[in-house]
Image 1 (cartoon, rainbow, N blue to C red):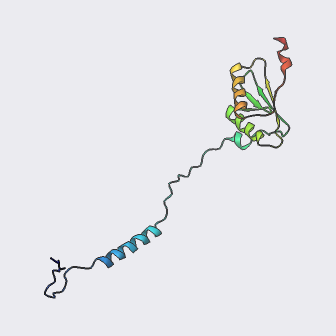
Image 2 (cartoon, rainbow, N blue to C red; image 1 turned 120 degrees about the vertical axis):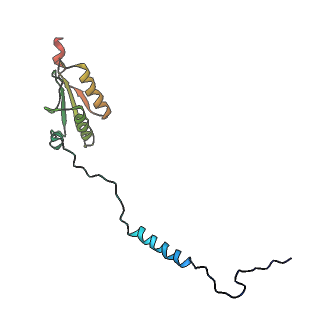
Image 3 (cartoon, rainbow, N blue to C red; image 1 turned 90 degrees about the vertical axis):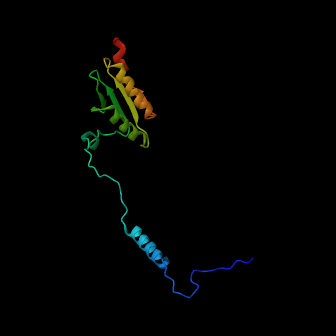
Length: 143
């Protein structure tokens, strides 16, 4: 038995269904145009962060040698200017990028807290300081 293709339009009547293919084509073109013309959304939030004055005017870095002093008053001095441990790390990182690498002279005062001296030593180790020496050891002769 052969099957015949039949249509609902047997008597030659006009088709009542609407051809939606051109409508879909137009809608797809409009969709692509909208996608292209929409600006790219950036999710950036612009903030003006406060600047620390010590970072804007850092103590000078000597290209030959720099001196770090740990005082009995629990201060860290970089070439005579007080700095924090974070600033010390920034300065040490900057010196390690110089060519030639300057020497670092560490001079803890005799009455300085050991914990602070240990923290300074840990910072210098994390900064991978290559040239470092202890100065002022004669102050410990009276102990």
